[in-house]
Structures are given as C-alpha cells and as structure tokens.
Amino acid sequence: MLRKEILASATALIDAGGDERAVTLRAVARHAGIAAPSIYPHFPDHSALMLAVVRDCFAELASRLRSSAEDPCAAYLDFARDHPQRYRVMFDGAWKPIGISTEVLVSLGEEPLGVLVGMLRERGNDEPELDAVALWLGLHGLAHQRAVCRPFPWPADITQRIAVLASGRTQP
Image (tube, rainbow, N blue to C red):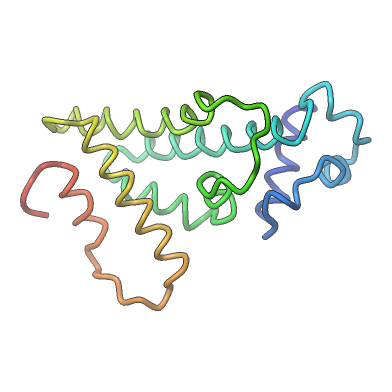
C-alpha cells in the first residue's frame, strides 16, 4: 500500500507543473506524509522511483488505448493533452536512469505499442508492426506540436489523416 502512495505522490508532484527535478525523495516523502527513509524499501533511489512512475504512465496510456478501440488516435492525443507533464517525462529523457539497462528503457512503450499493433491487425492492416510505429510517431509528433505551437491552425481532420496513413488505406 505504501508503494502506491509513494508513486501517487511522485506523480502528483509531476502533475503539479513540476518536472522530474521536483520529484526528489524528500519531496515525495513530504507529499506522502512519511519519513524519507520509508521510501527506500520500495525504491532504492530516484532512478528506480522515476522508472516506476514512467512505467505506470505507459500502462495508463495502454489502458486508454485499449478502452478506446474505435479511436485509439484520439485516446493517445487525449492522454498527452490531459497529462502534459507526465507525457513530457515519459518521452523527453531528462530523468537520468542511472543503473537501468537499455533493454528496460526500450521496453517501456511495448505495451501501448502492442495495443496499436493489435488494433491495426484486427483492421486487416498488412504491416501492423511497421504501421503502428508510424502511427505512434505521427501521434507523438502531433501531440508535441500541439503542446508547443498552440495557435497553429491544425486541419480539423489531422488525426484522421495520420490514422489513414498508418492504416494503409488511401482515403480518410
């Protein structure tokens, strides 16, 4: 139970407009109302805590994609819009994962990517693995650009256009 409270506190600090630098073990302990040494049995260091937070974020993204099988593109973009600080921490690599293997870091996005692969496969896509990566990159690019270029006049159907490209169809 304490592990969940620690993770919730770390995530709340990120959501509060801070970034991974605001997620110190002391700040997390203060937010959770516990003594800092209470964190160590659950997370030996900052990298381990941030890895757990990022894993939870990717799991939440996968859950949203699964629950929105009809429009996974919107679910992806909604997640990025609803949780901009989490999304940034997931993808910007600013937290320094000391002692965490490359394989572990690479595996973080496997679950949500797998959801996209499955959806494309069910829709008859000929190359679901490749097109899921293309779809992810398109959605990620759009999410990032929406965050940094808010006034840009995006086409109303931009999400559908990205999805069409990945689906292998020629018409939106």
